[in-house]
Image (cartoon, rainbow over all chains, first blue to last red; front, side, top):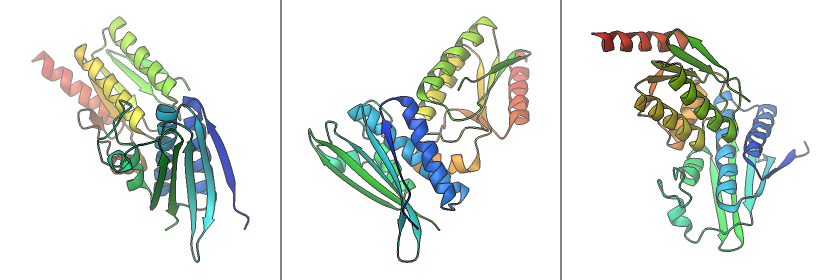
Length: 134
Length: 121
């Protein structure tokens, strides 16, 4: 099966809704449970929100991933914003520099199965998360 | 997507019809507060049965709505949060602890009726 791939540009709050609805569609297509579909949509919403709050604009990429005997969904949130100087601090519950709840990254990590972040100050941030179908 | 607000006696019932953008949530906040003031409402039910996702912004805005309405002397009940949405919220760390919740519209109305009965005693 060819990997499905969708990219959503995030430049305004309505793009957050568009991104999570595309994630939902892909997750339904892959046969995720309704509980997991909501977790995936919630993670996308939070990642897209981070892009808007910290970098003003960026992109969410959604793709199917085939493991050896399992299928999953990959979400890549990337931006060319200010980056995160202290990733460990950003992953701690309750930490926020944009006046939000500070739930963003640690919360997303709990929603998904795999979580990877790279960030370079002044060059941007990329967050990759995966959820495997149970 | 605009959220319709219906008046039922001294209560207002706002029923979310689907996914909400941040702008929709802020509009809902302004519209509810304006109506509570204009109609001297004693209670508000916010029905979230059709809400797809409750993320940090939605959760914060709903808490603000409940706080503002409480400061006006009225009560707010959130009803209809779907089990999947509740599960995702807790995983994300959003608990809406300060806000009254009920299973559905009927339970929400029962709560408001009870509360206004207590207030009259």
